[in-house]
Image 1 (tube, rainbow, N blue to C red):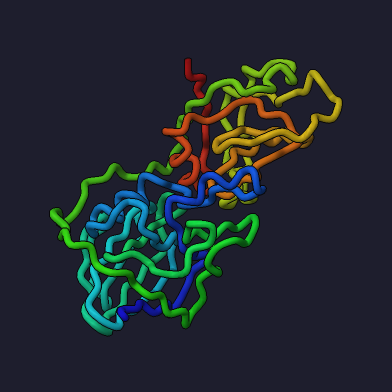
Image 2: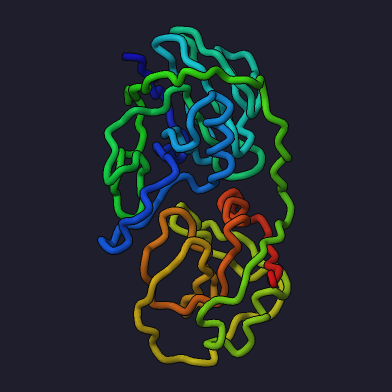
Length: 287
């Protein structure tokens, strides 16, 4: 059996795939890669089916060693990568010989990088998925130094590109499209969300990105009573009593008791997942 050995992890590294949909009735959210487009690209580069499990790396700092020849790719946040100390390209097909080490430095932009291995990470699935859910703890354990990850059977097809041209992740303010949510009328003026600029708080994780007001007026509630618990969707912008909106990401709870003022378009959720603390966000109302 081919394995890769985790020698070092940075702030956080987890095994992810495209999630476990269909378990809401049992109180289990989907989890999965926070930036789905970058995750899919990594798998495509190594000729895996898009749903094969890989590694999600927060900011960088991962070091892994191949015990036999493996084909890998790194996408998402552009953490500088080296193979045995030699710099290698981002979003490119990398061949590791037995004993070689892939190292990821700290990404200068973005928040999450993805490492795909040809054949996929073949750990035991839980409820049909190999994703770790940081909210519930379901799925494979957080990665730690010394972990030996088995690689699945290699697909018959071969990679047909050497690299993928990708747009650089911005370090300046990002514009995020959203539609008004089911409880926008609980606010004195829901359009205030779309005015001025917000900043991603340091209190952000795979559950959600909490936002601080940078410029513009605060959000004010028009209805102050308690809201019965109701379902929450990926991209929901929930506003707790502090007035700091939270954009729900991959590990979001399936229910919540604070009003949802708006919902980020599915196509823009990946961009929120790559916004790092201190980065500005502006919301634009989608019609």
